[in-house]
Image 1 (cartoon, chains in turn orange, green):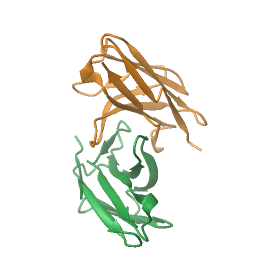
Image 2 (image 1 turned 180 degrees about the horizontal axis):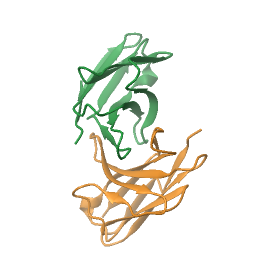
Image 3 (image 1 turned 180 degrees about the vertical axis):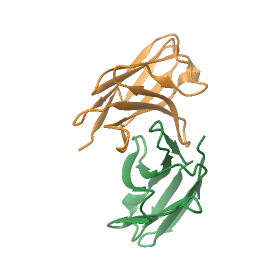
Length: 115
Length: 112
């Protein structure tokens, strides 16, 4: 149980392109989803927290107009990297939690490479 | 905010030996402490967790201990196997916001 699916797993695109990443909870309803960014050999850095039906809460230093998050249903959240540039290249990982007292379960991440 | 320190950053053990990873946290309000295993190119996988009302928890070869007074918690892996090789992350969560703060990670290598 507690499976989180993330798609795509890998994307390469040109600078200036917008890229959408999907995060789905397959066997549970997620009231809260989280988006993280991970650089090589580093820890996970929380970018934003999204609750179904409400606006995402962004961490300090994360540009909300750059990283658009939508959590339209209890099983789907999307992260759109707008006008991506090479410095946005990273490993983006989502997690989902059924409710605040429950563990976070992670997807397998999306490796984004901007040329 | 919460700050989590994790040591060591790398750990090499012989197959069959034990591995211990230690974490300290700063916010005494933190009450939930999960451990994740991340294999190359994958997302973190929850392997064990402990809540602040418990001092120790065990699941087969994996155990976690928590010392609330000292604000530190540890992961113990016994009888290590090559498939235990991965990066392990500890994390701490405060009651408000449901956010996790991660430690820096420990790269574990189990040598056959």
